[in-house]
Image (cartoon, rainbow, N blue to C red; front, side):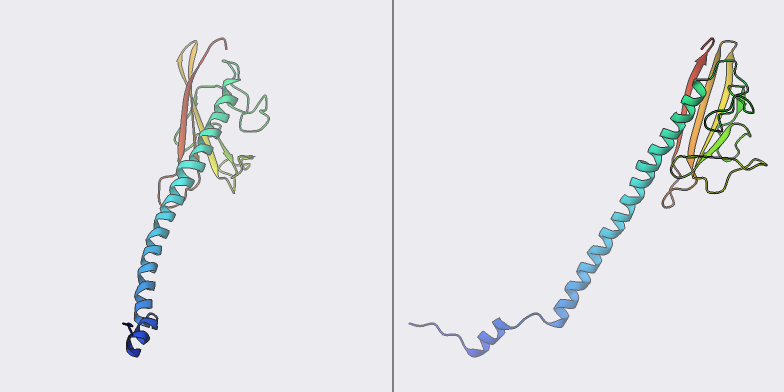
Length: 177
């Protein structure tokens, strides 16, 4: 007994997908791809803000902290807003400053470009053009032999609508060191 199929059955099995089936499949794939792209955008924003930029702000805050900690306890003149630090024209470890990045205290703020290079402040003070990182610091005298050094670094702008990454470091400096 030989099994034979009709010509109509053979023709139906050889047929491909209809245009409607292809369009429905393409619409489903596009919807899935759009969802994945949105997730990729969120991941990129988080990685850039919380990874790269946050790490840089912490690194640059640490750099400024180290620069301040090598000064003598009574130094009130070294200018750490330039590199290498100048022996005069600055605030050294004089009590003052602020860690408010939106209203920095003159003499207690410096600016870096996107690569971390120190930028010279304009003649009248204020922020130089093209700055990307801002560092502010505050020196508080806790006693005759103890000062608190506080440094905050932030970026000009982050990625997306999130708050820009900021890092704050605090340490103590004691006399005679």
